Amino acid sequence: MSDVLPPEQRSYCMSQIKGKNTKPEVALRKALWGLGYRYRIRNRLPGKPDLVFPSLRTAVFVDGCFWHKCPDHFVQPKTRAQFWLDKISSNVARDQQNNESLISKGWQVVRIWEHEIKESLEHAAACVIEVLEKQRNSILL
Image (cartoon, rainbow, N blue to C red; front, side):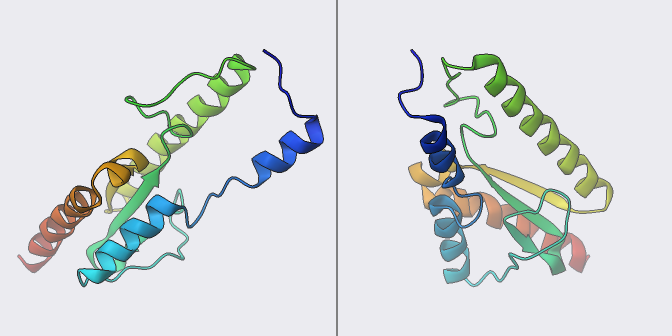
């Protein structure tokens, strides 16, 4: 089935997809802030993590299921399949490269899928907190 929108309208629709301050990202930020965890959102680290805990050297990414190829929820588009496969595959490769770069610089990397936040915000926050507390304990030792 071909696209039902003209190219100009499709371009506009795609331009409106947010890359920052998405609902899952904001929900996780609010949950962590409410629990007393302070973070930064502006940074120059590889991959531009969504949340950064500088004193604990921890970077948190909130990954969209489509854009980062979630193993549970990714559905291959039926139109322009090869274009999208190449695009999504390059996103996954870039994510892996950013992880390796951050780890080599001594950072912990946490990746949370958007569906994990939607299913249980408390569990997603607990996963981040677990890593933060391990980092805190290793720094104190």
